[in-house]
Amino acid sequence: MGKQFDRIDENHRAFIARQRIFFTASATADARVNVSPRSTEAFRILGPNACAYLDRTGSGNETAAHLLADGRLTVMFCAFEGAPRILRLYGRAQMLPRGSAPYDALLAEAFGGTAPRGARQILRLAVDLVQTSCGYGVPLFDYVGERDGLERWAETKTDAELEAYQRQKNSRSLDGLPTGLFEDA
Image: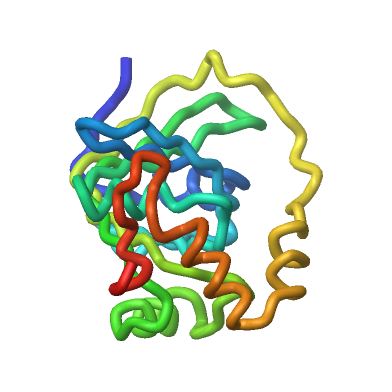
């Protein structure tokens, strides 16, 4: 049976710090459910009820569209090595587009002021529930390393090319919802 908490405690922080991957889940009432994997290199705990992750350009931007329309976000970590465990962070999130004042402030505060090439937004989650569960059904895996394909792809693009790609691929969701990445989209 899962246990529920009203904040991220030190045990949760330690568990999150040992993980290499997390998953985000978002949806609206009328849109497809989106689940995305992310590297924990981009994840930061901001306090007992807040966390954020630095998001890079991808082939879609479903999470941002869902947050703009609905606001709900779930972040899940699960142990692929060591003792089994699943930890979920539930709450409401907002997307901070690259270049906005809130993005710049959080980038400086939590990410050392430096974003990787192709960064498009930071997603900030106000955590209202933390849930842990056993994780007995999660298989064991060995961590090999981070992939560098996204970084290599972004390095080959100019700023104008990155923006053009984002406008084409990241301005609307699969269901046609706006993502908020560009004010004029």
